[in-house]
Amino acid sequence: MSLADGRYACTCPDFANRGAQLGLCKHTELVRLRREALKQSKAGGASGPSAPTPPTPNGRTDRAPEAPAAPPQATQDPGEVVVHWGKHKGKTLSDLAREAPGFIAWLAFKMEARSDEDRRLQEAARKVHERLKLKAEKGEKKARGQSRSADPVAGFIAAAGIELLKEIWRAQGNGRDIEDPAIQKALELRLQAIRRVAELLRKI
Image (cartoon, rainbow, N blue to C red; front, side):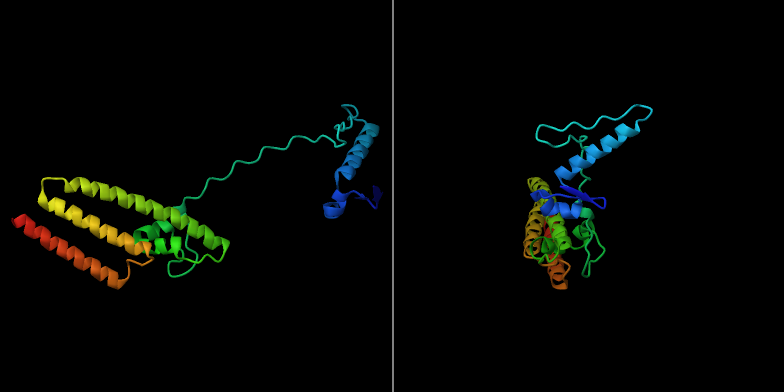
């Protein structure tokens, strides 16, 4: 090990691998600490000379314990992730869950992630999609409860609603956008048919 022009050099493998960039290794660090302790001992001071840091049995100098790592930041709610491209750029996934749930399904299962940002968006979309699925399942259970009612109209509407909900989710699972005009037209026709049948049942 040597010292020239204020820079340390050492022949150990650690210095050869990374010490040349950092300017230190365990040997140079030990020598530096001992030199500083010797200077402080000679200079003295109001509180007396500082004792050199004792080396450990393996030759290394004890260091002060590292400060505890900062606690990890709270994970961002997946619904607050913002789409960074396309026609929905600038919208959060929560917005799209209300406006275009089919696009959420496409992001979750059909999108080709080409960057880290894309991958984060896709992971968040899958979580939001799972939330939508659970919400739909809860609605289905509620509708089934209503279908057991003695009211035949309520039972019919609940059963028809369940079937329509299943079809919507199948379309979304296949990556189709329910905002598509053709799908919107088909849904409207189904709803009109359900209303007509419900009106007939009320007249019976």
